[in-house]
Length: 353
Image (cartoon, rainbow, N blue to C red; front, side):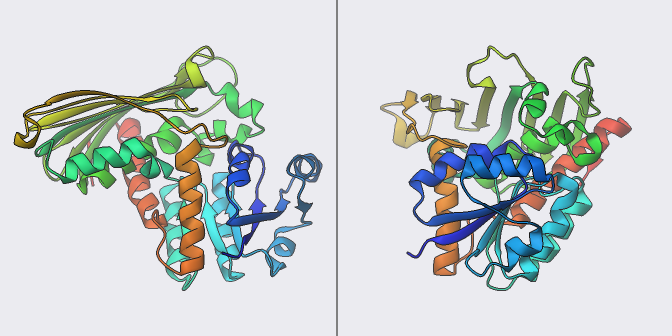
């Protein structure tokens, strides 16, 4: 496969440097150039990446060898950038949640709908996690019965991380910062991907705790989702993990059905997955309870193995002209629910979808 020439647009974000080590194991791509509107900052980053520094977005997009662009801009700037990249005939990876508002995300999706032959994706890479795929197989095989309940906790390190990583705009509510819009969407997407169930109502509470750094985002959000099947999901999403917490992530997911349950402590940063799987399904009569430790490949870079597999899927979709595994429409579904949850918290009542 001929390597795909790649440009990075936007560098004042955590993820460009986090994704970067993955490319050592991705011969499918050939990173070529970067651009950021802050020229002084961009010069330093171009030296770090050892890539060309484009003078402006038009120059980056005009390079014929740049076939694909990864967009890591502040959220308000994403829709216009995606439209510009598509107009230039480039494949696009736009970092989730793809905008500062639901209207922004809808603009991205509208631009993607007209991108005939171009592969537009967004970073819901938990779908590529090996344990997440195993759980999906258990659900599809009926080993949990009818799904009745989901629970998801995603607590990341505090808001100080965004000053450290040159992305202070992530502390602004008007930029679509905040844990629910940026983290909660992962579990919202995963629950739908596992079950195919559609959320029909949401109620949420958001809290801010004050202190430094100054911010207008919520610090934590608690959400109850109701699904068309009558299943319920509970989300605990926040930027409250202490600096001492391993990998600065506190992650937990559970799924319960009429025949079984899964309790999963997802891996982050190379630790083993830990899972308790219990099922009364007749095919598991000899081993109804399983304690599973699934080793995780030690792959440097954002999300490790699942990040690597996600980017490899994008490359294959480009070269084989097939659909991407994660579309911007998938991202829109998650954004609709996260937006409703934020409105529920602001208005103090349940929102029907």
